[in-house]
Image (cartoon, rainbow, N blue to C red; front, side, top):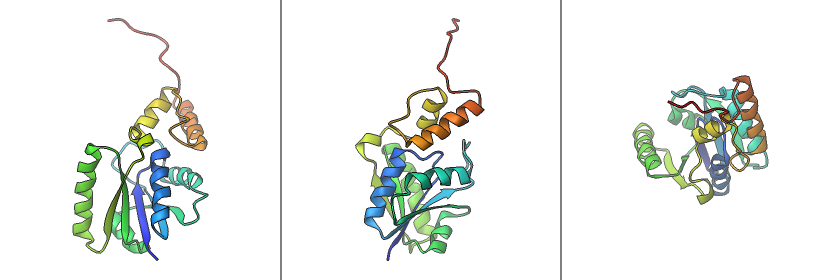
Length: 172
């Protein structure tokens, strides 16, 4: 049985992430979606919220599970018995970053393979940052994420006093 680890921040999960998770679940016996709890990023949702949003999105995939983790990703991969680490790629800029990370992880854990899945064309533009920005400005995100994620984003926007379009223009 081969276990694959799909690590990331997933702040929040979007349709591109879900696509990679579904495709991974067809390739490997078990897919652990690992939500990193302390990335060096400004987060909209905490680790438990991000994991719950992703878990709801993949509840119909029997061989996928969602967990949170901290520390080195390769160490967590070893703890859960993962032999493969999966990442999604959208563009050339993703490739450069992911290539560096893959080589670093390979140096730290030569026993774990790295697999990059190219994003589906429908999601090539999509990132969590774009999703959050559109949501915080009150845009339609219904084609970018599951309904429960869209609702969580709308709720967070309301909590922060955001979620509407610009209502005035200032001339300089």
